Length: 88
Ligand SMILES: [Zn+2]
Figure 1 (spheres, rainbow, N blue to C red):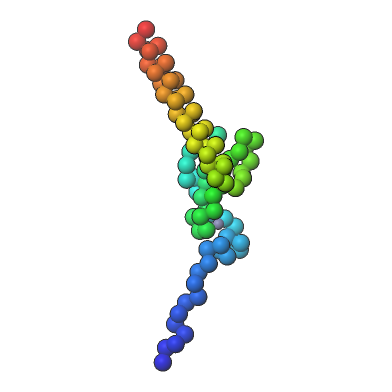
Figure 2 (cartoon, rainbow, N blue to C red):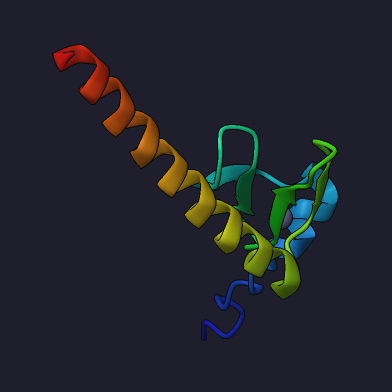
C-alpha cells in the first residue's frame, strides 16, 4: 500500500521568505524605470522616481504605462531628428 507518496505542495512564497525573492526584469519602462517580477511568487516591483524599488501597485502600473508612452514618443522624435540631421 502506497499511501504517502503525495508530495507536499510547493509554496512559492515560502521559498521567497527563506531564500528571498528572485526578481527578473519583466518590463523596461524607461532607461531608469523598470518593472520586476519574482519568478517564484510573481510579486511585482518597480523603480520609483527616487530610484528605489517599491511594490508595483495598480496605481504605479498606470504611471508606468504613461511614462512608457512619453518615453516612446520621445525616442521616436529623437530618431526622426537624428535622421533629419543626417540628410542635411
Ligand atoms: Zn518571490
